[in-house]
Image (tube, rainbow, N blue to C red; front, top):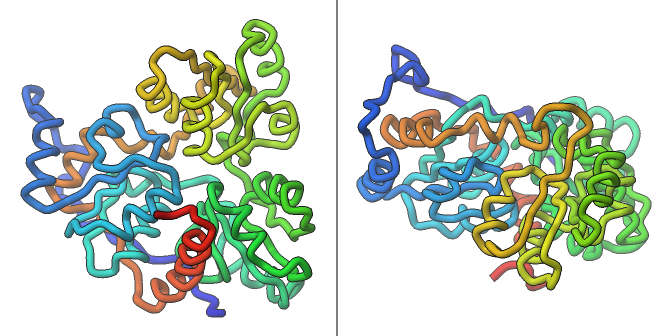
Length: 339
């Protein structure tokens, strides 16, 4: 397994500065985005955590597994990935001949940043040289290249269950998802000490008080949340699984413990139901990912217009990261998780 450092990314921004461009206030940005998509044969892929306007102009909205599949299957020449950096990297890994754009190059990820590839590689080599590395897709291309199999929260249990019961495993980078998987699978995987800043900040005390005010509301949570929140949850699942559960459940109100961007789709798909964002352990709206929210409709338009910032990487890195991604896709298809 190759040990390769994180991908290099280029951004050929206009001379005067990409975000210094003043848009004509009369410009119909929605119409312009549709025009540019047709002109450039471009597709917009958006994560559920993006702002509502971006979700509404996207050609495909999904979680990490669905977005990876959509990126792999698209016939577009240009992929605009409205998400964070590791997601756009994933699209490039799967589509080496396509142009992959990210509206804001600074849209990073606290979870991805918690696992520097070189540090992880040294740690594994020193302490767990014979362990299989299963890595959550929320990581850099360099981290994927140091992995044996990638997983998402949608297919993680199926990935783990596909491995022999006695096979030693390192799970990275999310310790909360890893701990939840250990409980679900009966494993004792070694966990890298990483976490998502949004999912770690939910307050069990405030959720308990909120439940008292809404006794009929079900608490539905993403497995990146800390264990005390998961223990009192009525349902735990990936972003898509939370959405589907909320739509199909006979319950009429839900407290949602994940990034609040998903509430837009929940409300669209089940307008007669009530969705309440789980409260964070502070006074700000920090159940919103500040990295996801760096992307805006205006930046998406400029990204399409100028063809930048573009995600690039070396072919050596791409191929090393592709191998564990392909194993994920193969196992997911065998488990019936992909069409």
